[in-house]
Length: 213
Image 1 (tube, rainbow, N blue to C red):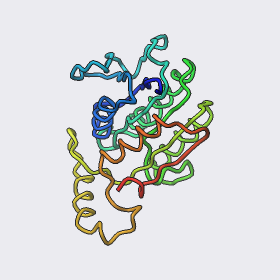
Image 2 (tube, rainbow, N blue to C red):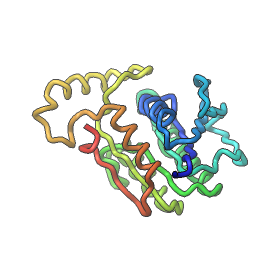
Image 3 (cartoon, rainbow, N blue to C red):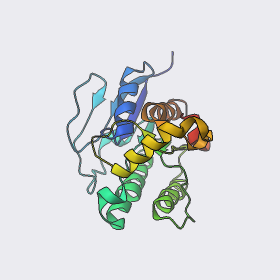
Protein backbone atom coordinates (compact mmCIF):
# COMPACT_ATOMS: atom_id res chain seq x y z
CA UNK A 1 0.00 0.00 0.00
CA UNK A 2 1.15 3.54 -0.74
CA UNK A 3 1.80 5.98 2.09
CA UNK A 4 -1.11 8.46 2.31
CA UNK A 5 -0.22 11.77 0.68
CA UNK A 6 0.01 14.99 2.68
CA UNK A 7 -1.29 17.91 0.64
CA UNK A 8 -0.99 21.64 1.14
CA UNK A 9 -3.86 23.41 -0.62
CA UNK A 10 -3.69 27.19 -0.94
CA UNK A 11 -6.86 28.82 -2.25
CA UNK A 12 -9.35 26.36 -0.75
CA UNK A 13 -12.20 28.87 -0.53
CA UNK A 14 -12.27 29.81 -4.24
CA UNK A 15 -14.46 28.12 -6.84
CA UNK A 16 -11.87 25.61 -8.04
CA UNK A 17 -10.33 25.31 -4.57
CA UNK A 18 -13.64 24.31 -2.98
CA UNK A 19 -14.09 21.47 -5.44
CA UNK A 20 -10.49 20.41 -5.04
CA UNK A 21 -10.75 20.35 -1.26
CA UNK A 22 -13.87 18.17 -1.40
CA UNK A 23 -12.22 15.78 -3.87
CA UNK A 24 -9.03 15.56 -1.81
CA UNK A 25 -10.87 14.87 1.45
CA UNK A 26 -12.85 12.09 -0.27
CA UNK A 27 -9.81 10.52 -1.95
CA UNK A 28 -8.39 7.50 -0.06
CA UNK A 29 -4.91 8.30 -1.39
CA UNK A 30 -4.91 11.54 0.60
CA UNK A 31 -4.03 11.20 4.27
CA UNK A 32 -4.14 14.84 5.30
CA UNK A 33 -4.86 18.27 3.83
CA UNK A 34 -3.58 21.55 5.22
CA UNK A 35 -5.45 24.54 3.82
CA UNK A 36 -4.24 27.92 5.12
CA UNK A 37 -7.15 30.34 4.87
CA UNK A 38 -8.36 33.79 5.87
CA UNK A 39 -11.74 32.47 7.03
CA UNK A 40 -12.65 29.23 8.76
CA UNK A 41 -13.51 26.04 6.88
CA UNK A 42 -15.89 23.29 8.05
CA UNK A 43 -14.16 20.71 10.22
CA UNK A 44 -13.09 17.36 8.77
CA UNK A 45 -10.89 14.59 10.27
CA UNK A 46 -8.35 14.94 7.43
CA UNK A 47 -8.32 18.74 7.38
CA UNK A 48 -6.22 21.35 9.13
CA UNK A 49 -7.03 24.95 8.22
CA UNK A 50 -4.71 27.45 9.96
CA UNK A 51 -5.85 31.08 9.73
CA UNK A 52 -3.26 33.24 7.98
CA UNK A 53 -2.57 36.69 6.61
CA UNK A 54 -1.23 36.19 3.08
CA UNK A 55 0.66 39.46 3.34
CA UNK A 56 2.58 38.12 6.33
CA UNK A 57 2.84 34.33 6.07
CA UNK A 58 4.51 32.43 8.94
CA UNK A 59 7.82 31.25 7.48
CA UNK A 60 8.52 28.72 10.26
CA UNK A 61 5.19 26.83 10.22
CA UNK A 62 5.74 23.07 10.05
CA UNK A 63 2.86 22.63 7.60
CA UNK A 64 4.92 24.11 4.73
CA UNK A 65 6.47 20.65 4.50
CA UNK A 66 4.15 18.39 2.52
CA UNK A 67 4.27 15.83 -0.27
CA UNK A 68 2.80 18.35 -2.71
CA UNK A 69 1.37 21.85 -2.75
CA UNK A 70 -1.52 22.95 -4.95
CA UNK A 71 -2.10 26.66 -5.46
CA UNK A 72 -5.46 27.88 -6.76
CA UNK A 73 -5.16 31.50 -5.65
CA UNK A 74 -6.39 34.09 -8.13
CA UNK A 75 -8.46 37.20 -8.60
CA UNK A 76 -9.46 39.58 -11.40
CA UNK A 77 -8.42 43.14 -12.20
CA UNK A 78 -12.00 44.25 -11.52
CA UNK A 79 -12.01 42.70 -8.04
CA UNK A 80 -8.46 43.75 -7.20
CA UNK A 81 -9.14 47.31 -8.43
CA UNK A 82 -5.52 47.89 -9.46
CA UNK A 83 -2.75 46.13 -11.34
CA UNK A 84 -0.56 46.18 -8.24
CA UNK A 85 -3.22 44.50 -6.09
CA UNK A 86 -3.91 41.93 -8.82
CA UNK A 87 -0.22 41.08 -9.12
CA UNK A 88 0.08 40.67 -5.35
CA UNK A 89 -2.58 37.93 -5.36
CA UNK A 90 -1.74 36.25 -8.67
CA UNK A 91 2.06 36.52 -8.58
CA UNK A 92 3.49 37.48 -5.20
CA UNK A 93 1.43 35.11 -3.03
CA UNK A 94 1.91 31.98 -5.19
CA UNK A 95 5.65 32.65 -5.54
CA UNK A 96 6.10 33.25 -1.80
CA UNK A 97 4.25 30.01 -1.10
CA UNK A 98 6.51 28.20 -3.57
CA UNK A 99 9.64 29.49 -1.85
CA UNK A 100 8.41 28.59 1.63
CA UNK A 101 7.31 25.10 0.64
CA UNK A 102 10.46 24.37 -1.34
CA UNK A 103 12.65 25.57 1.53
CA UNK A 104 10.75 23.15 3.78
CA UNK A 105 11.45 20.26 1.41
CA UNK A 106 8.15 19.94 -0.45
CA UNK A 107 9.06 18.31 -3.80
CA UNK A 108 6.00 19.03 -5.98
CA UNK A 109 4.08 22.18 -6.86
CA UNK A 110 0.89 22.35 -8.91
CA UNK A 111 -0.45 25.71 -10.09
CA UNK A 112 -3.88 26.62 -11.37
CA UNK A 113 -2.66 28.99 -14.10
CA UNK A 114 -4.60 30.14 -17.18
CA UNK A 115 -4.90 29.59 -20.90
CA UNK A 116 -2.75 32.14 -22.68
CA UNK A 117 -0.18 32.43 -19.89
CA UNK A 118 2.81 34.05 -21.59
CA UNK A 119 5.52 36.20 -20.05
CA UNK A 120 5.86 38.04 -23.37
CA UNK A 121 2.14 38.82 -23.75
CA UNK A 122 1.05 42.43 -24.19
CA UNK A 123 -1.99 41.63 -22.05
CA UNK A 124 -1.32 42.23 -18.36
CA UNK A 125 -3.33 39.22 -17.11
CA UNK A 126 -1.64 36.72 -19.43
CA UNK A 127 1.77 38.28 -18.86
CA UNK A 128 1.43 38.03 -15.08
CA UNK A 129 0.45 34.37 -15.31
CA UNK A 130 3.36 33.67 -17.66
CA UNK A 131 5.84 35.51 -15.47
CA UNK A 132 4.71 33.47 -12.48
CA UNK A 133 5.20 30.22 -14.40
CA UNK A 134 8.69 31.34 -15.39
CA UNK A 135 9.57 32.28 -11.81
CA UNK A 136 8.33 28.95 -10.47
CA UNK A 137 10.59 27.01 -12.84
CA UNK A 138 13.56 28.58 -11.04
CA UNK A 139 12.53 27.36 -7.58
CA UNK A 140 13.91 23.85 -7.98
CA UNK A 141 10.82 21.67 -7.55
CA UNK A 142 11.29 18.04 -8.54
CA UNK A 143 7.83 18.11 -10.11
CA UNK A 144 6.12 21.26 -11.38
CA UNK A 145 2.76 21.28 -13.15
CA UNK A 146 0.89 24.20 -14.69
CA UNK A 147 -2.80 23.56 -15.25
CA UNK A 148 -4.11 26.08 -17.79
CA UNK A 149 -7.92 26.24 -17.91
CA UNK A 150 -9.86 28.56 -20.16
CA UNK A 151 -13.20 29.99 -19.02
CA UNK A 152 -14.09 28.31 -15.73
CA UNK A 153 -17.63 27.03 -15.38
CA UNK A 154 -19.34 26.90 -12.00
CA UNK A 155 -20.84 28.95 -9.20
CA UNK A 156 -18.75 31.69 -7.62
CA UNK A 157 -19.48 33.37 -4.30
CA UNK A 158 -18.07 36.52 -5.89
CA UNK A 159 -20.06 38.06 -8.78
CA UNK A 160 -18.05 38.48 -11.98
CA UNK A 161 -20.46 39.88 -14.63
CA UNK A 162 -18.06 39.69 -17.58
CA UNK A 163 -17.11 36.11 -16.84
CA UNK A 164 -20.76 35.12 -16.33
CA UNK A 165 -21.77 36.59 -19.69
CA UNK A 166 -18.90 34.83 -21.44
CA UNK A 167 -19.76 31.55 -19.72
CA UNK A 168 -23.39 31.80 -20.89
CA UNK A 169 -22.31 32.55 -24.46
CA UNK A 170 -19.81 29.69 -24.56
CA UNK A 171 -22.39 27.38 -23.04
CA UNK A 172 -24.69 28.05 -26.00
CA UNK A 173 -22.10 27.76 -28.77
CA UNK A 174 -19.69 25.37 -27.05
CA UNK A 175 -20.38 22.34 -29.26
CA UNK A 176 -19.37 24.40 -32.31
CA UNK A 177 -16.05 25.54 -30.85
CA UNK A 178 -12.63 23.86 -30.85
CA UNK A 179 -12.11 21.85 -27.66
CA UNK A 180 -9.50 24.29 -26.34
CA UNK A 181 -12.05 27.14 -26.34
CA UNK A 182 -14.87 25.40 -24.52
CA UNK A 183 -15.89 25.93 -20.88
CA UNK A 184 -13.82 24.06 -18.31
CA UNK A 185 -16.05 23.00 -15.37
CA UNK A 186 -14.46 23.71 -12.00
CA UNK A 187 -14.66 20.04 -10.86
CA UNK A 188 -12.74 18.97 -13.99
CA UNK A 189 -10.00 21.51 -13.31
CA UNK A 190 -9.84 20.37 -9.69
CA UNK A 191 -9.43 16.74 -10.77
CA UNK A 192 -6.45 17.57 -12.98
CA UNK A 193 -4.82 19.59 -10.21
CA UNK A 194 -5.33 16.81 -7.70
CA UNK A 195 -4.04 14.07 -10.00
CA UNK A 196 -0.92 16.10 -10.79
CA UNK A 197 -0.24 16.35 -7.05
CA UNK A 198 -0.99 12.72 -6.27
CA UNK A 199 1.00 11.35 -9.22
CA UNK A 200 3.87 13.84 -9.59
CA UNK A 201 6.18 13.27 -12.53
CA UNK A 202 9.70 14.64 -12.62
CA UNK A 203 10.15 17.85 -14.61
CA UNK A 204 7.84 20.62 -15.77
CA UNK A 205 4.44 19.74 -17.22
CA UNK A 206 1.46 21.50 -18.80
CA UNK A 207 -2.18 20.46 -18.60
CA UNK A 208 -4.11 22.33 -21.29
CA UNK A 209 -7.76 23.35 -21.39
CA UNK A 210 -8.88 20.65 -23.84
CA UNK A 211 -8.20 18.05 -21.11
CA UNK A 212 -10.76 19.68 -18.80
CA UNK A 213 -13.98 19.83 -20.82
